[in-house]
Length: 434
Image 1 (cartoon, rainbow, N blue to C red):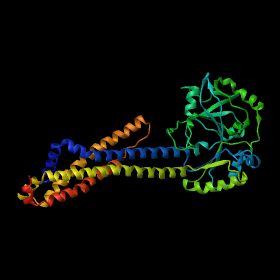
Image 2 (cartoon, rainbow, N blue to C red; image 1 turned 30 degrees about the vertical axis):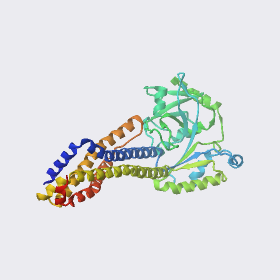
Image 3 (tube, helix red, strand yellow; image 1 turned 180 degrees about the vertical axis):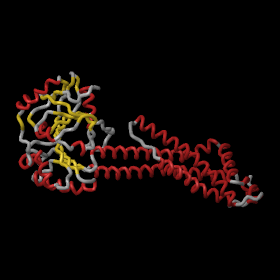
Image 4 (tube, rainbow, N blue to C red; image 1 turned 45 degrees about the vertical axis):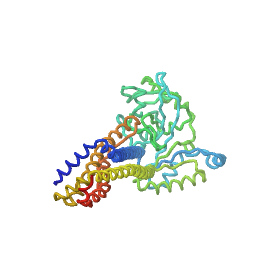
């Protein structure tokens, strides 16, 4: 009997017992589907984490202001009353010769209203170089330049969402807007950045809603109240409001964050060690800051994802194991049921190898059909999770090939013993079996 004839015979046997064959396939179907769905979820989470880390900048170290609590409050008031401050950036520039850039950031929170409609934006004071460090791209106009910072120029750059909320579909370049009691001229608009939902990284923010201004303007002593579109004739008001502002000492001005950009992601951990040493000395041992290394977050994310994949693979393997045991049980029952058939085939010239091949092919047919159905369910399940749970899923061809290959391997392993047992049946005794 040729291989095609054996496969045809196996299919006929399976179709003659449809319910039994379907129940036998269930373990393989759910095992393969679970592998594909779980790997798709894991791969989607991995890609989302990678994209978010790249948006943060993989070659940077972020130093963020941290609140003190408990006994540290009194010590902080005595030793480091200003926390993370503007002068720290000068200290880091002097010591961190390896740094490509040291970018101070001051975030100013405010209630924002545009045409009597509340708009959620964040005012971010920074300097030129911020856009390179954070992998941001200017869509139209320009970003802040050195003259803006040096001369306290009241200009701003809008994030994509902030531009839409304030100016709608109109071109804002060259127009003015009022932030609190101060008039700013729009010089640029940032290209929209895709920020995934459910981020595991607290340092990741929706950059599209930010409004960027020179840091020398943001550290002056004034409170930002609202934002509204105003006529272009308000440019002259800049000088008036600039004279009315009471400026704080720049060196002691508190910062929200400092970004230190280094040569490569391999240099971030050594750079973080130097930064920590410098700030510990400047803050007199008060840990009123936290250091975030995006590259390290990425490594931790990959490690966590690998553990997640191992656990999911183990769970899916249990399903395949259960499916394999079911296949073995059914095949053993089939051997007993077809004992007389085996005896007849042996008497008319079939060898033991022919019997083994026949039953092995039948087991493979069961697992392959179950694997194909499982692939369909796995892909469908991944799409359903992406649609209804709003999780990113990426169906991996490698997961499909591996899961199908494992299902076929299960068929071979668990079909081998019943096939060998069938081949060892004595032909004479088999013919007597009723």
